[in-house]
Amino acid sequence: MQEPRSDAPAAIPPQTGHRAGGGTLPAFEEAYLRFAPLLRKIAIGKFRIPAADAEPLVHDVFASYLMHAADVRAVEPYLIGAICNASRHYWRRTAAADELFCGETPCAATPDDAIHEALERKLLLTRVLARIGAKCRDLLQRYYLNGETTEALAARFHSTPGSIRVRIFHCRDRARSAVACLLKRCSDHGTHS
Image (cartoon, rainbow, N blue to C red; front, side, top):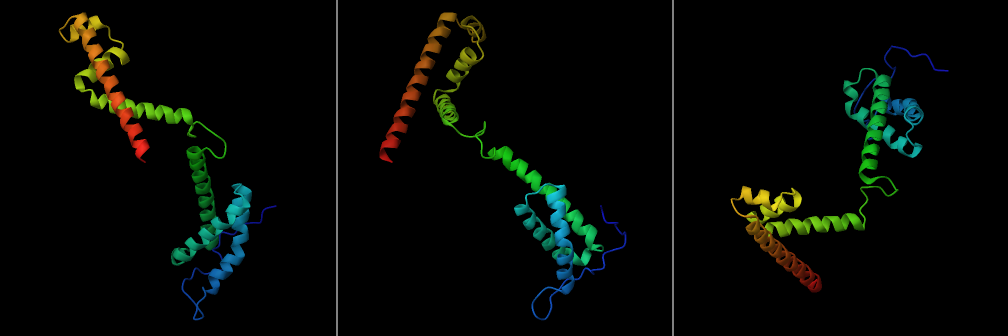
């Protein structure tokens, strides 16, 4: 059974400051002793926060309260709202981390050999395309990626299909040379390391 709520502000005045002995004001200590169990119960019961993670949330809420106590008119609603917001933020942060790191089970974002090999191929292709020049890059892209025929390329470049085939051959040869050069450098780099 729920306890009836009062619209009246909490009996604990929102005071800040320190005692002469160095500790916090009794009002803050009283607020912590009175409301901390309720905040833990809300975090664990309503938001299903694991008990080990609920305690730090409660401490964060009270740290925030201590910093803003002068502006707080009603302590109980402030603390309840703060724990609800902190709990929602906990789940948003946890969900984002799970999406990024996929928890403890392997997922599509988990790097494996296939991902590394695909990345290496893409990097090699990028470097090769940078070395063969703009005309060869354009011609090979149109022929291999876009699927344009030699006849269509001949019409586009005001040439003959035979000339286009020769240009494709030379561009492929330049690409092979670039790959060989890059792979030789990579292997030379690896042997000197």
